[in-house]
Length: 469
Image 1 (cartoon, one colour):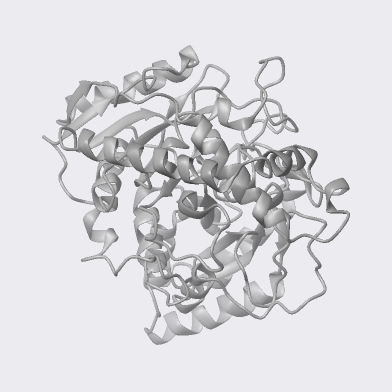
Image 2: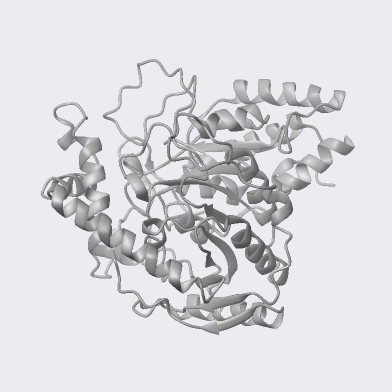
C-alpha cells in the first residue's frame, strides 16, 4: 500500500480509510505536499488553504475512527474551480476586476454538497477570466500548464482542475462546462471529465451563459466520477431548472452491462479535420469496444457545425456579465474576452432568440438520432495540446477557441450528457481523449459505457502525470 494518497483513486482512498491503512490526514498532507512541489510550475491553484484542509481532514479522521463517515467520499482531498461561490474564500473567477475585499459568505450548491459529504476542500483551481475560453490563463493568475509537458496548455476553462487531478494534487475536482470546459482539459491532461445532463448538477447563481452552462466532476477513474456525481446531483432550491433526484445511484449504475447496445462512431462529425494520431488512438479504442461486445456502426449524426448560433449565445452571455463590471474594466480584462464582450453587444434580442431556436432544433435532431443509437462516440478533441499562453494553436490561422473545440460545444447546446475518457497517447506521449455522448437524462448509460472503455483500455491511475512514479 503506498504511503501517500496521491497514488490512489478516491475509491481506493476510502477503502484504505475503512481498513485503517491510511487516514484522511495522511492523504491530505500528501496532496498538499504535491501542491508544494509542483504547483509553482503548473499553476493549477489560485488559492490553497492548508489550515482549513487539515482541520477538515482531522474531523474526517475522527469520523472514520468512530465508524461514522458521512458519505462515500468522506475525507477525500478535492478541489473546486474558482467559478463556484465558496464560503470563506474569494471567488475571483480569474479577474482583477472583481473585488477581493467583500463578504464571501455563501456556498454554491456544488460547494455545499461537497462539504455535507465530508470531502476535504484543499482550495480553488485556476480558470481563464470568467471561464470564457478553451485554455487556462488569466490576468490575475497567469498561465496554467500541462503536466505532461509544461510548455503546452492543459486546455480549459477547467484547466486548473484537470491539472490538479492529473498530478494527484487533488483526487477529485469540479469544473464548469459551457462549451467543453470540463472535457477539453480532461482530454488534454489524460483524466476523466463528465458534463452531465443540464440541470443534473444545480448551479447558483444562475450562469449568464444560460442553457449552455453545466457543471461536472473530474477524476482519474470512472468509478470516482460516479461517486462524486452522487454527491453533486442533489437538487437545490436556488436553481429552479435543477432536475429531480436521480433514481438509484450512479456508483451502482456505472457497472451496468452495456454489451449489445447500439453505438454510433462518428470520427469527424462529418465536418471536422482530426489530427491523424488522435484519430488513430480513438479508432483503436472503438475497435476494442466492438470486440468487447458493444454494437458499433460508423455513422455521423448529420448536422452542420452550429458555431454561429453558439457564438451568439456565448458572446451575449459574456456581454451581459461584463456590463455589470466596474467602469474601466475594458482595459483590465483579458483582451480576447474584451472582443467577445464587444461582439455580444452587437446582437439583438431577435438574434438571441434565433440562436435559441437553432439550439432547440439541434436538440430535437439529436433526440431523433438517439432513437437509432444508444450513444454517440467521437474524439474529444481534434488536435493535440499546443503551446501554452495562446488562445489558438500558433500558426494555425484560427481566430477563436471554438474553431478547435468543434466536438464539444454542440452537446452543450443540446444539453446532453457527454464524458471524455483516456484513449491512449500520441507519439509525443500526450494523452488522447474519447468522447461518449448519450440522450438527455441518460447519465447512467454514458457512465457505464465509459466504464467499459476504462476496462478494455486500462488507464494508469497509480502514478501522477509527469511525476515519473
